[in-house]
Length: 251
Image (cartoon, rainbow, N blue to C red; front, side, top):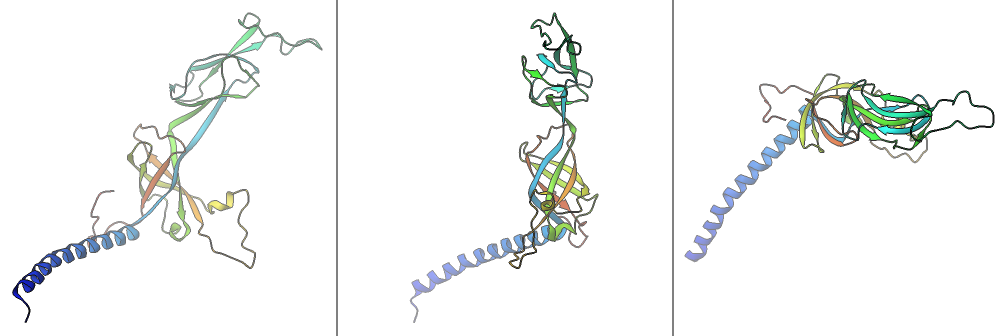
């Protein structure tokens, strides 16, 4: 015969165990549903980064930099003077065996202004006052914050599910913000194709390596500046949620 105290202790443990089992079952069901929903309606990757065009701006004439008007991170307008280069007046007509004169005060030089070719932000300044530059050598690197996009690498097993025009949510780690975007282009080749030494699977010791397909995602930044080269997380909606399985949360 089981002692009464032992029986009551077992019942208490049972009463405590039943709610824990229900909670664990509910949590497991929710996690399973979320995993199924994510894998069915979305393709996600953290193998992505912000990219864009860096415009190299310099003088079309060789000379010495005598002034730089803006610094890194500053906004510039199209046609704004951003640097001045002093070019020797007799650079094209000096006699043989003589070097052109370069006056430090510019009295013997022709001053040439360098203008910004677009509205943008200074990403880098590679020329310093007093340094010499050749014709076409960059002094500044400019970027247009409205002309940036995300380059995301999608596993080849999921690449067939991605289509141009699909909506995407981009989380920028550098700004800790989410942005909306859409798939703008899909590269018709794996990322490894563009490496200096593409992989060769012609040998008998073949090991399958997962390849990644680069895609271009246009981002609606809303005026924010996404730093080039920073990491982002991408979540592409590949299917519309049905009435039977509606979207349980906003991205």
